[in-house]
Image 1 (cartoon, helix red, strand yellow):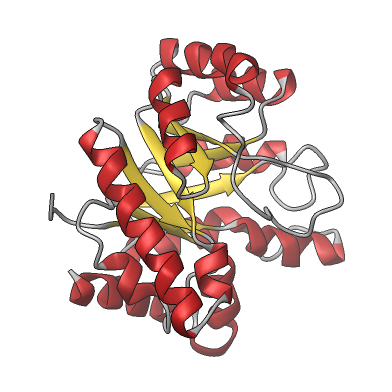
Image 2 (cartoon, helix red, strand yellow):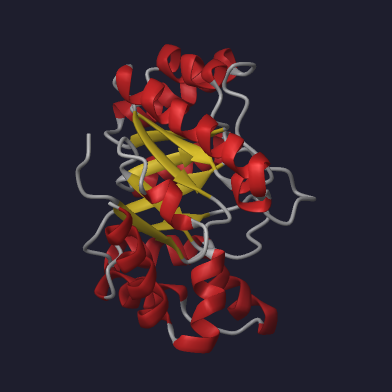
Length: 242
């Protein structure tokens, strides 16, 4: 598959800046609308258990305001399942979550948690919410996603992003192989975490990958050039890589 590559923009860290002062500015919903006008195909938001950035009312307002799909990142908890089923976003990406981590530090262990994850995947799917599993580019995790009947996997690219030289090349090969294996088994592969203007092209060039989800870098870069320019440049780099 060599179709168009979608860009999902994660607006969590607009909310992080807002929450630093406890007010209403900057508004992540406004950021989502600017991103949509600037080349984003979807918006991603992670409602964490501790509400450190996105809040419940943000989710309500995003659902009301957006005309492009919302991808809700969520931990596999009963609270988050209830929220997802109430709001019915286009997609829900199940991610690992530990309260002490600054950001998501790795992929979900779908292989080791299959029985636990099954009811979450089943209930989300029954509600017509497209389920994604945020996993490492590992055949065992892809095989688990097949067993769970998840239509989408998102490969954690954080390791790729923080390596260089031969180590990065090896990790890129792992992602290439994983994307091919997922697609061969009817699963749509996405990728995200740690992607920047400098490292996105090799990931974007992988023909089987259908979507990249990028947040922290784009919001940080927007401080210097504006969100419209930040998203637009990433969009152009992704398109050029294809």
